[in-house]
Image (cartoon, rainbow, N blue to C red; front, side):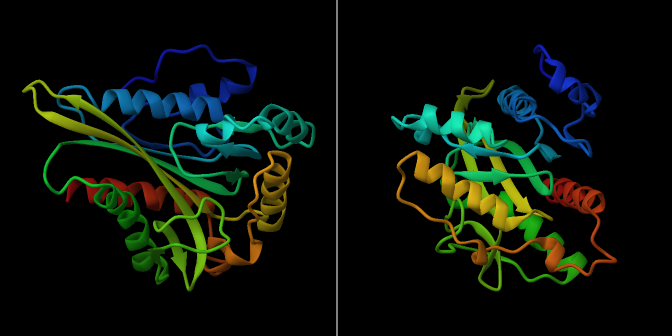
Length: 258
């Protein structure tokens, strides 16, 4: 698999070093625009004949990522300018959901797959394919018992948050694309995204998120105490961001093969 064809600006040069494989990760920070282009490429590839699932695990510089629905707010442009001046650039993503703060300690998982449309096709089934490799890996490797649930006051809240003891460790979102395969069957390509709290300054991220909401005239307030980092759940001598990313990548690969 080759990476998509697009122009790299100076801040994206590091992206040229990303492995061009269906299952890959980047230890270096990836600019949001570059990661978004890779997601688009993998989603397009999933609609081609004989496609296979793909997974890209990455982290990005500090920023705020929002769905297109928020970008239509009248005060969005001014809010973005203010946040950018505070070193919190705002980016618009492909998937749904709500605002998601980002920092280098956040582990992003982009998982793409396709299937023939059938009676069991559903949003819930797609989320299970996205969440199960994570919850199983955390249980098997670190004995962390995680599950999916809504957490009131969490960022990008939804019933498919990944949660430990009532505290959110990850947010999830997905995007669907319908297409017909070479046999003229109705098919579905899914881009699923997970933002996993690895080792981030939670209070700083939530403060920036709440500031953006206020600037955008959105009456929401995120509670930092409703979140927890994996680094707080894994013993310090065992927590290693790169090892965690590799383990998660292997888990997605194994689930795809099973």
